[in-house]
Amino acid sequence: MTEEPRLSAREMIERLGPALSRARRIRAVVSSLSGLSGTAFMIALWAGEPGPLPSRTQVVFALLIVACLAWAGYGGWLLMRRVPLFATDRVIAAWIALAASLATTAALATMAVRRGTGLAPVLGVGGLFVAAALVLTVLAHTRRAALLRRARELRRTHPASRTHTSGN
Image (cartoon, rainbow, N blue to C red; front, side, top):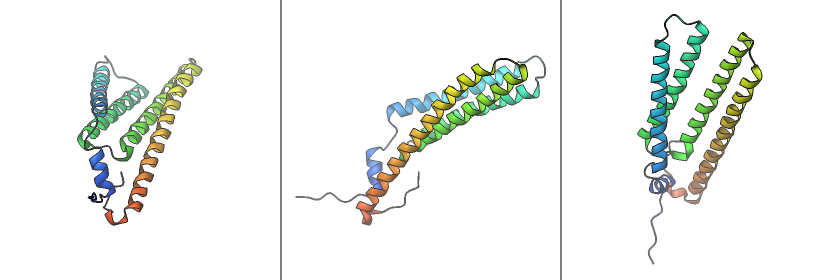
C-alpha cells in the first residue's frame, strides 16, 4: 500500500481550483465590459450636455462613473488574479454593490427632497436594492468565513505541512 504525500492546505487548494471556472470567467468579463461601457456612456452623456450642469448633477455623474469604474476594475482584477481564494471575490463584489446602491439611493433621495417629488418610491426601490446588496454581503462574508475556518482545520490536521498563506 502506498501512502500519498501530505500536502499543505495551500497545495490542496491549488490542486482543487487551479484557475477560474468558466462561469466565473464569464462573470468577470461581463463585469469588466459592463463597467467600461457604463463608464463610456456616462462620460459621453456628461460631455454631451449643451451647457454647464449644476454642481449636484456633476456630483451624481461622477458618482455613477466611479461605480462603473469599480465594476470594471473588479472584473479586470478577477481576470488577472485567476484564482479566487477563500471567496474574496464575492466579498469585494458584494461591498461594491452595497456601496453603489447606498450612494445611489442617497443621491436620488436628496434630489427627490429638493424637488419636492415623491420620496417614498425612491426609498422603496432604493431600499430593495440596498437590502439585496446587504444580503449578498452577509452571504459572501459567511461563505468566506466558512472557507477560512476549513483552511484552519486543514492546517491543524496537518501541522507539518504549514505554508505561508496570503490571508485572502
